[in-house]
Length: 312
Image 1: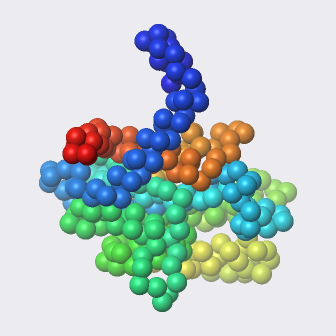
Image 2 (image 1 turned 90 degrees about the horizontal axis):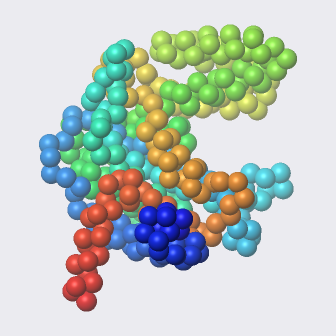
């Protein structure tokens, strides 16, 4: 941004000044996101709206990781997790008849927030509140069919069940296949061709809806490794969300590619570059700013900001 301003307008703005202004603006956007839940548009809703949820870690400064447990060998953490929700529609079809994301608005909302609350608590988690605000803006519950897509993480389905118990729940088909491919490599570490063939057979069982046969195939390997047991229980626990042939017949997406693309566009390419280490406040501001722009709400934010400043 500093270089672009210099080249196009001969205006010299220090890089650090750009960073400070972006973070300050992002903090304003984050506050505005909590205050404004005006529906994005009043046009007729598509027959089906999809809600996708996911989480990804971003590198945080060591000073803000003290006492946090994580996945490092010593039990420490190197990241904080960003949780994202996104809403889209997919009424178009490709040449093979598979659903394709519509060119209309895709909206995102994310932050470093927890999705967990004690069972006895009457207060919703921070992330649950975020999902409620985004679904209100997109009139998600007013669509004829509401679908939730995720990778199988329990917090996703807990959130979906709490807020939208009547929504159709689908586990992303490619995440399931990745689990099966990883298991194949663990079972046949010295024979990659055999592992690939074994994985393909399991993928075919999944695509054809033969979940009972798939579980029967996996069951003998349950005690052979932690990976085997993990994969078996993952599929068994989520099998009612893996009825992909039936979902296809109903015209539903079975992939969370829109969510993955949203993570990559705003988080991976901006916050997870080599050598980066963020503060929680700084990263939260940039996340809010980038998703506001990607969701097509940046101009609306400036209008509300201008109105507030004039009123003051």
